[in-house]
Structures are given as structure tokens and as C-alpha cells.
Length: 117
Image 1 (cartoon, helix red, strand yellow):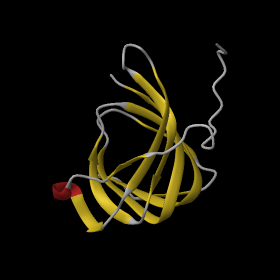
Image 2 (spheres, rainbow, N blue to C red):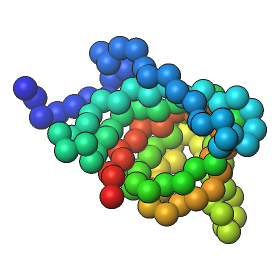
Image 3 (cartoon, rainbow, N blue to C red):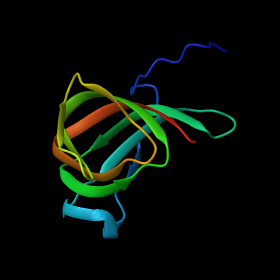
Image 4 (cartoon, rainbow, N blue to C red):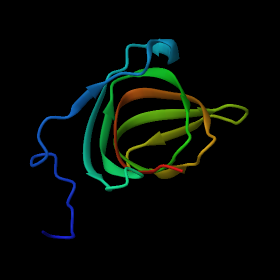
């Protein structure tokens, strides 16, 4: 088994289809696709590709997440802070304790690595 894992949607098949909980939705009807490529045996780390259609929903992060947007435009509205517009090519970290609204303006796709705390 190789210790190199390439993020290749062609070899990872069908994504998991999800949506935010109805009580968290602020606007629209966002739908998510997730291709989770890696889960560590202890379940504390995940990596893969996530995509969302337009809409907005409340988020409350208890985990640490590194992201790189590969397509689309999103705005992160952190409670008590100015909104941050993110687009394809942007990389960022969302730290545990982040609360606010994730707004997808144009269908957004991101690469992610999530570490549960």
C-alpha cells in the first residue's frame, strides 16, 4: 500500500450527499457533496473534497479545519467580525470556536483536512 494519497475524484466514486440541518439554514436550499478520501483509524482526522450549492447556514466549529477553495465564491461571516470573501485559490484555517454563517455565493468546492479536537 502506498503512503501517498492523491485527491482524485475519478477513483473515489460517488460522493456522500448531505445538507445543513433545517434549523441552521439562513437562506436558500444548499446541498453538499463530500468525497472523504482519508479517515485516520482513531477517527480524529479527515481529508477530502467538499462541494456546496448556493445558500447560507449557521456553523459552529468544534474542530480545526484547513481548506483550499478550488472553485466558487463563499463568504464567511464570523460572529462579531467583518465578513471574509473567499474564492478559488484561497487557503485558510477555521479554528475551534468559530461561530457564524457560511454563505455560498457561487457553487464552492474545497479541499479540506479536518482535525477533531
